[in-house]
Amino acid sequence: MNIAELKFDENGLIPAVVQDAVSKEVLTVAYMNEESLKKTLETKETWFYSRSRQKLWHKGETSGNTQTVQEIRYDCDKDALVVLVIPNGPACHTGQYSCFSKESGGQVDGSRFDIINKLEAVIAEREAERPEGSYTTYLFEKGLDKILKKVGEEASEVIIAAKNRSHDELKWEAADLLFHLLVLLREQKLPLDEVLTVLKERHEK
Image (cartoon, rainbow, N blue to C red; front, side, top):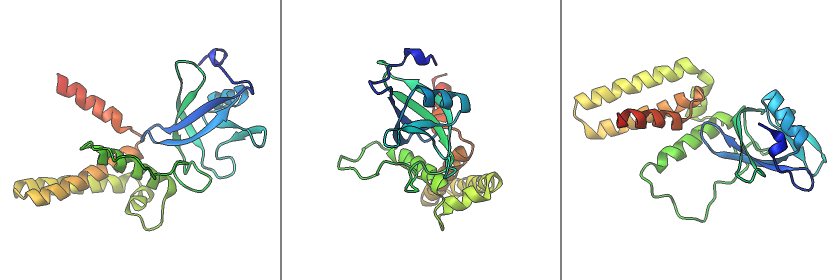
């Protein structure tokens, strides 16, 4: 990235939209100056400029909830940034996965696959916040071997349901398999978008 090409405002700042590189959820919006952007590029972790404190701050310096930078993009006017990160814990100072509320007065997306996007976001939130008593938290805390075991178990259940020609059973088992696959993708830091891209490429051959 050529920082000299960017257009900082009259205060030497540029807005930075921080986005989860895997789930694509927007985590927070902050500001960077030239120095904090350089530190972000050098350390591969997010650094911002606090307008209220008038100084640089390293995300996660006190909380431990750092953000590992995967990519930084700028818009066509070169006056705004999108910072794609792997969050190492909640992004918000309140302990929430994202600084943005889920409340919305708009219409619900009618896409038949909208639930996949919502489920992916919830799984990302569970990984960051680790709420006590959550099954998803349990899976992440047990780690890869446990997640893989559950994927194998659910795949077997899908096979059994299909052999039994039980549509109701197959429906539930397929849903469980899909959930555990999404957890596995999150644990591996592999965006669902990349899987869908491969699926599309194979379908087009």
